[in-house]
Image 1 (tube, rainbow, N blue to C red):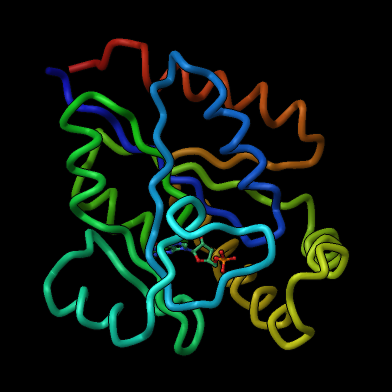
Image 2: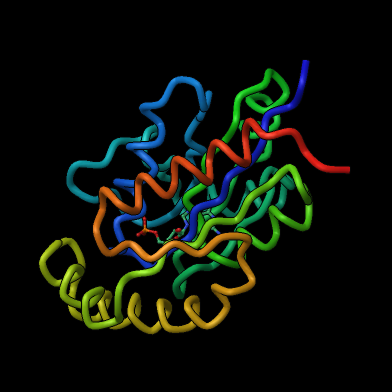
Length: 194
Ligand code: 5GP
């Protein structure tokens, strides 16, 4: 069976990336499975174990690092670890599913290094940093300190966004989603050039 492909979505938090991924997953023809990462951060209201993340203790996370269970992992924020589990990805792509990853840019570069043309890196940009700050404040799920940390990380990520395969600015959601469908169709269905 033909192996599945990997589509990595990276974006500063608050950019609307989760909404975009959820929307794309509604298209059955993409055979898209969401890669559920592991993290030691606490669960936010509305999140579920096994759907949004596998929530682990710091000890459990570190044991998995030791056991080489991660395809890639990062200390995304100080003492906050996030990682993609090897077993899950391999299992799904081996039976022909395509995988959607919601991970940061270092994770994205690592996936590209391991999977090459089988992986597509998509960066979703906010219209501006001001718009992003506003969205994070409105979301109300993060403390002021967390918001500052996230904005600082956003600046660092935006600086390397042009090393991604595709960069999409999420200004008007419907337009972004239409653009994303074109990108998905090209990557998943068009024959690869030699
Ligand atoms: P949040 O705490 O807002 O859910 O996620 C924080 C950041 O961690 C986001 O930028 C998200 O893309 C990133 N992230 C989530 N899972 C992973 C992962 O498995 N690996 C890496 N490298 N980053 C991740």
